[in-house]
Amino acid sequence: MKKYWKNIYHLQLLVNIAIGIYFIFWLDPAVDAEPVTKYTDIIFTGIVLLLFLLNFIWTKNKYISFSVRWASIITLPMIFLYFLSGIFDTWSDNFSQHNLYAAIYMLLICVLFIPIAETVFKQVISPLGKMISVLFLFVETVTLGYYDTFSKLSPIIKAINDYHVASAVASFLVFQIILDQKMSLRKLKNPYFSFLILILIILFNIWLAFFEQFFGNAHSYAEAFWDWGHNFDPTAFTFFEFNFSNVFRSLYAGILEEGMRVLNIIMLLVIFKNTKYRLSLSVFISSLIFALLHFNLLFDPSRDLISVIQQVIVVFGVGCLWAVTYLYTGQLWLNVLLHTFFDYIAFSTTPLAHAALSPLSIYYDGFVEAIFLALIPILFTIFMFFGKRKQTMLDNADQLIQPQIED
Image (tube, rainbow, N blue to C red; front, side, top):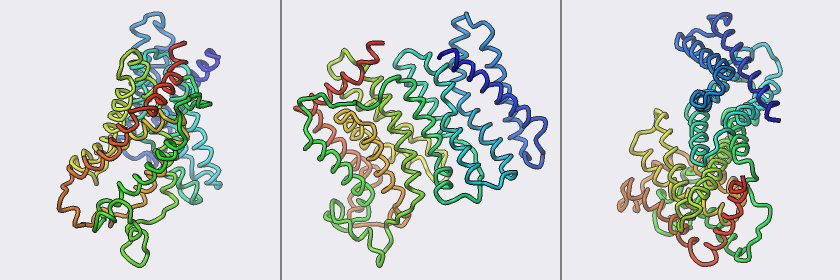
């Protein structure tokens, strides 16, 4: 099986070299008019060609093999996305079935990283190395993204394409291959588990999704904590609007970020398996990584450093909640649903909502409010670190890392 994936990986490298050469020498200049794009084509093609050749030269030299492995992890996912998107964009006018064409494109993106995951990412053995490798993958697929200019698509296909759900699935498959184990526990073999606590976790997640978004719109503490009806009143100010496209935008974040969270939690549990505070360290460090990754929002010209830092603070708190949610339930799908729901509420809030000023704003500047909004889920997280709740998470943690220890 390893040789099978290695052959496919080498073929994928050759295909990308061919696409790069096509872009450099044969692509109509009218289509590829930007000089910077031409330089990018040359650089990317050169990188792929070099890595392809190095796969066959000095393979027994461990230092060169190590360098080639990490150079591939750092560069190739982005290059594969770039060339695949570029070739589909270039040929899009030649196909009349735009929805089918876009569907094929997104299907190819879903499986795009499997060969490199099986042959390169899987060679990274250490837990910390695995975390670093997926960090690079995240940066490449989220911060740098991919390019697409499809038009004339049905609303559903367009929403899936516009919000890059396929690239989230592609990255998620890499996480699964790296872990080489199921990311959800089959059965909760735990005498300390309580369905009442499970219901409480779910209800708190749902409440928090509304509270975090509507807190700044409140004209009283009741409106801040539970009375949110005015946010949905179509006859008054429109603070909240439902948008079908936001479902896929939220699903993208839910799949990608929760998949990465689970991998980081499991790897951190392995790293700290012999320490007394392995549970809290895994929760807080994984949440810190999750929060810091949101600095990629600085690439958005509409955002400034202050607002991004405030969001990072809030996201850290919410990340702690999602970490204990996963450790208590052992179910990735539940985390994906709760994260998707949270982001859907956030993305469906109109700009008017964020511009609103309430009497509560007198007491909170941006940073104090961010800390307050982060503190609420952190307090719930601390609540989960006691009694049978903690023992449930410890037992689940032992089950989650067992396949890694056995390897």
